[in-house]
Image (cartoon, rainbow, N blue to C red; front, top):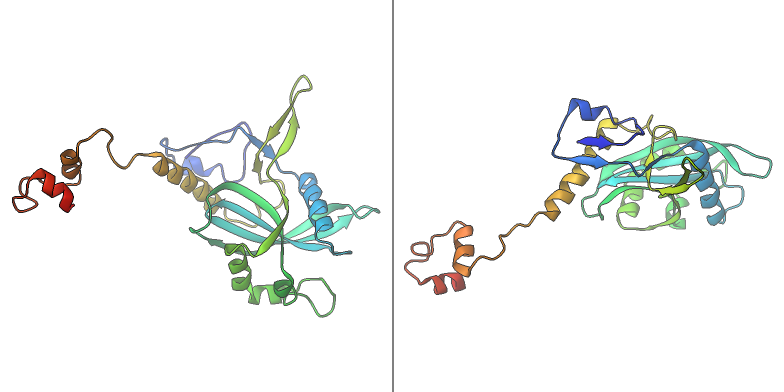
Length: 241
C-alpha cells in the first residue's frame, strides 16, 4: 500500500517493506492528533458522562474491522478542572467483521452501569480497577460489538489554518503524537488500513458482465449450454440454472 500525505505516522514505514502499487491510501485529508486536541475531547466526554470528579474513561479506536480499547486516565488538569495531560493503557484489541467498515474512528465512550459497576475499585468509587477490567475483557468487547455503549465524543475532524489565513477541516487523525502509537503494533494498523482499501476495491468491482444474453451468462459460469444440461435447449438450460 502506498500512502500519499505530507504528514507521516508511526506505521508509514511498512509501505517500504511491503510495497504494493495496486493500493493507494490518499491521506492528504490528515491532521496531527496532538495531546491538546485529545484533551479537548476528554473534557467534552467527561462533561457528558455526568460523573463529577471522574478522571478515567474509555477510548475506542477502529480501523476497518480492527478495534483497540484503551483506558484513559487524566493525570494533570488546570485549576478549573480542564485536562492537560493523560495516561493511556491498552485494554484489548480484536477484529469484528460483522461491524460496519470504517477507515478510522476514535471515540470516547462510556459503558452502562451494569458493566461499569463491576470494574470499579473498592478503594475509590468511580475509579477503575485494571485487574477487574482484565478479567472482564470479553464483556467489554462484546459490549462494543453489540453497540452496548454510549459515544461521548468523537475525534473525526479538526480545523487547520493554511497560509493566507484560510482554514480547512481535516478528518484523518495522525496518531503518533497522542500516545496511541506506543501501545499498538504498527503493522496491525498498517494492515488494517490496507485491508480496508482492498475490501473497498473488491466491493466496487462488478462480479458479473453487463450486456450478456442468458445463454452467454450460462457460459460465463462455466457451463456448456449444449452438453451440461443433458441435451436441453438453451432456454431450458437457463431455466434449470
